[in-house]
Image 1 (spheres, rainbow, N blue to C red):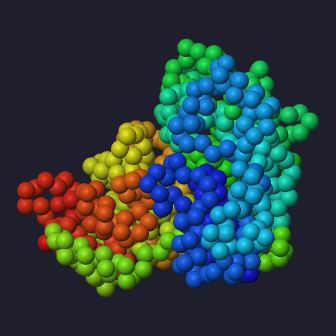
Image 2 (image 1 turned 180 degrees about the vertical axis):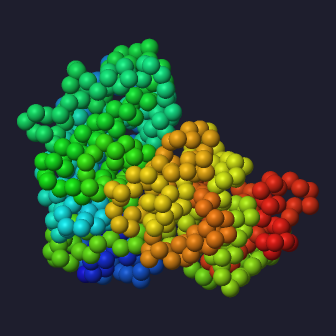
Image 3 (image 1 turned 45 degrees about the vertical axis):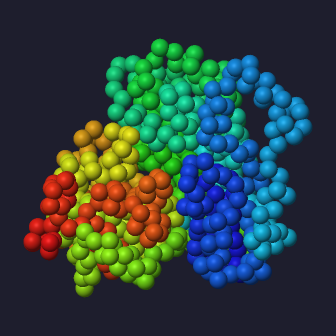
Length: 588
């Protein structure tokens, strides 16, 4: 049976399940110039997926849409305008008109959502609509192993189908919803409002706000945290639910209230208090859910839990035996979840296979990599190497101080790079760390660059890993045992982002990491997503060809080939670029 999952909201995506196994995903953001503005049906991603798999519309048995209802589509400019008008006479009038006047704030209907299927040759009569939170819970449950087969899935985000948070119990793959929190009490909307109030961009900069909050200090921090904590409380009659208190209005329309409530408070104190409040409140919620459901194996998903820097505090603040984060906690993974739920409804839970290795996106084939190497050689200024042991050779160059891009194999589900679409360098040299930081986020001086780590290394190098599930994958924030080596310059004692992989999921990346350990000892291997000039993940060889020279990288590991710059006769390259070309490492 072929099931096509489609997420046609923010960050649209498509997924294909064949006989219960997830075989491929595609993201519409990879085909547009402005990925932050994209919303709607993933037409180009679906066309590409069907073409690569050699499928016709008639071959697809079920088409599963994520979300019973879609919110009104908004561009980034419209979102900021909505926040600016919150609490004003104009904003209140618009909200009243949308609720009172028919069709004034109409959301996309199901008929409109089905229209693009005809152009792709897909049959609309084979479609079904899956609840937004069920889709998110399904992919989280499918990606996590529970020793006793019983799993607690917690979803916390802005809003989806009128719900801001939900609690699900998974037994052998079957999901049962046991609690819901409506969108009026949304912690995600509350966080977005504070992000806007502090001059940052909602739906984009929440993770940066949490990173800033970790740096906050001062006597007033606890007072501001207390002012935030009185705005929410747990329902005494429904212990898994929370609600607003302290006269807080609906969280999606509380800008003016928070401005008054936090008047004359410092920026850093508000950021730090927001982080502290979320850590404490979410830890209490996780504990309550684990206690009332008698389930100690928990997986977290949703945009709020997508703020992975909260993970160390959640681990320390809860008594759960196992606590993990879904590999794709944001809306982009909803296509996979919708397909899983649709298959479970049509054929039964026993026909749904667990989500295997996380690399399900676009492939970089050996033939494409060979064409890339030949074209770069024709352009000149490079030397091409095709060593017998590609991972060992790349590890030697990295240990020598090179900054390398790596494009090979398939893209991972969460589009974090995870080695296959990454920039790599050793992490004990400040100039290299700074160079990678500039590539990842040149506009953010406090940005921490993730480190690539095998799951077998976690306990030896990091604290608080005892609650992580077997074979975790994705990005986690963990506190290193040797902070002087693993952390950056901002806060040596803080947790650091870690991109965790396991050997059976990607043997080539694991082999590279093992070879690097032999060449450089226990030195961290920094690994950040390789973004092209448009700020998108470098998906194809064409993206690599257009970007790597302009970005000043030392070289590219493309499949079985290594493409390295020749030494610059004018000595305009950074020192770390020359370091990799020493004769010991084979440079010319």
